[in-house]
Image (tube, one colour):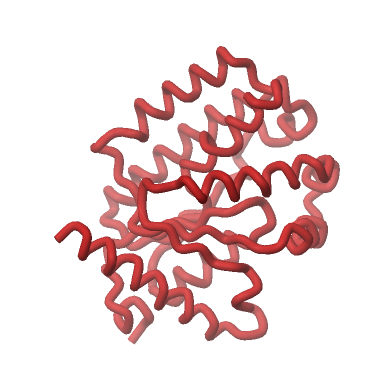
Amino acid sequence: MNLAQKYNIPLDAVITVAGTVGAGKSTLTSALAEALNFRTSMEKVDNNPYLDKFYKDFERWSFHLQIFFLAERFKEQKRMFEYGGGFVQDRSIYEDTGIFAKMHADKGTMSKMDYDTYTRLFEAMVMTPYFPHPDVLIHLEGPLEDILERIKHRGRQMEQDTPVDYWIEMYERYEQWISNFNICPVLRVNINDYDLIQDPSSIEQIVAKIAQKIETKREVRL
């Protein structure tokens, strides 16, 4: 019996993992999918033609990057639900508009005209009754010092070359964003409350909490 059966998690559920860079989204996504016998939907960065350019010149490439992400995440969200669910997703479509695009608009590295265009497109595509939202959004969070250490430890060059102030601001914006997010049920998980490397069984604690969120959502609908 897998954990989805044990905790009565619907086989068509879609669970999205959100959180700032370095929080461990990909690791948790893979562990949850294995525990639940679900498929993964991983964030694709290797085929992104704008990512390296963006880290070198925010102002020049921020709009292009966000449009690319919006299109790719929209297609992926549609694919998961057309497949019949049963997915754990690495990063949500909502973070792009609520954090990244807004941050660049606020800082002036995305023009007001571009931000308005992006926002209108996002709302037309996503904020409609027809767009399928996740059953649960897991927000990974933890102390800023731990997040910065993780970014440093994984050693991606484009992240190492990015000023620390950028990561600090992103961290703060994530906290503001998740505090006001209400599109679907939210499960906030501290990265220091589990250790999937030293204790793989700690994934069950998270699965139990996911089940509670889904059950609460069902009761509200009834």
